[in-house]
Amino acid sequence: MSTAEAVSTRPDTLVSLVTLYRLFLRTQITIKRLLGIGTLGALSILIGLLARSDSNPPQAVADAIDGYGLGLLVPLAALWLGTSAIGDLVEDKLLVYLSLKPVPRWQLPAAAILATVSIVVPLTALPLTVSALVAGAGDVAWAAFLAASLAGLAYAGLFVLAGIWFRRAVWWGLAFVLIWENVIAYSAGDAARFTVTGWASAVLGLAPGIDVQREAGSGGAAFVVLPAIAVAAWLAATWHYRRADID
Image (cartoon, rainbow, N blue to C red):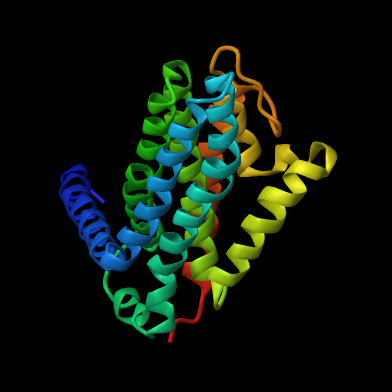
């Protein structure tokens, strides 16, 4: 391919990626999902108000963000949206139409992950940040935003992968969130280092004077580990999509 031809294909590649991204945004954003996730996010703000009356508001709200926000709110939101992104196309037998278009196979999982992150982060990270602010814990707010955003990115990759790989992925994902990411992460020794919540908690632990219960490692390492999980999930989803029999 000549240089001129290579340059001419780049805009087409970007256009197709943006088109898929917009498609997933339209299919994922529904009133039901926005209300459901928004209600869970509002609950985190209420928890922040209650933490304000604690003898140690920063630690109280950090515990709430760690247990409820990073343990339930972020993964459940990503699960609901991520598994449905490509999973709904598979269930409805519509993925075959997209697979026939002359679009690089890596773009479909990439667009699905980007769209999921674009919805999950505002609906989860922002309420958790506000939760810390209303509790009077400004030093926790920035750590909460970073932890929730990075966790949302990692979970988006994992659950988009699950949606393209498994039938009824939402149930497998729910078991993963409740059992592995919560019960085992808390109770089984060093298991936290193999969980998204453990690394997200490590970022939350960067806030001054805050202790977290399931820290997986250093907060600095989490800035590498969590995006790496998303990239690995995208690569695995692309590999599976290229080899799957789509009908």
